[in-house]
Image (cartoon, rainbow, N blue to C red):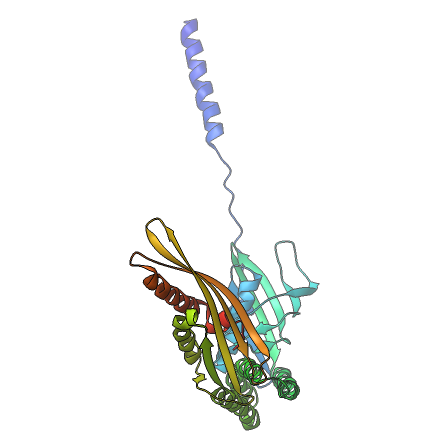
Length: 335
């Protein structure tokens, strides 16, 4: 009898405590409401641009917002973000704030440095929303000032470059040309910001720089000479120079340059191969005989068919080096 009572008590206790342990409190996350500025963002006006962006964090949301803002300007965006908090409100679960951008966001190198982040808030796991604003008149003004400053710098550097040799002038015009590659896109954006904007003056200046670059390249000539052991190396260098759209011709004057290739080749053998160890020195001189570029190379040609073929392999390796690194690096010259 006692055994039955004990067994019944144990079964009851097991069910009682087991049932209590099985009852787990369910935690239901409070649904986060989407703020009104996110569900119904303001529309751009004749004076201001507004844009809403989203992303997994503040930076990606801002990038998306900027991309949305400039989509009306028919250009693409890449942005860099750095900001400081001006004011912050709300509880610890909210990151709503006003930010002023201290970096420069680039829209195909269109710098937008005067936009504001009006609202920003976390909407849940890896979800962020940002609302930004930019004044059209201020944006237009900043873009116009930037372009004018760029041309002022180029004009000053043009005077300095005019005292350099023809190759350095080419390098200058190339850098100036590349720095203005985004100008048409920027002018297009400015035309969208201010109707009736006349961009012809800036396009004319850009075309003048492009023409100066093309003319400076077409007027330069190179001639290549070598010692007897480097005779096979002339062709790869000439090929590399021609690939840069320079003329190979005898000439004289301040726009003519002479490349000299000197090579000492030694015979060697290793693992059944005939080797041609070439110590190569390359120099580039201007019309006054002043060395303006030079380089030293050590190449090893190899062959199973004799020394002559191994020497030809040196030329093949030089050609591969020029194709990989560019003739300018091989010559020790910026072109």
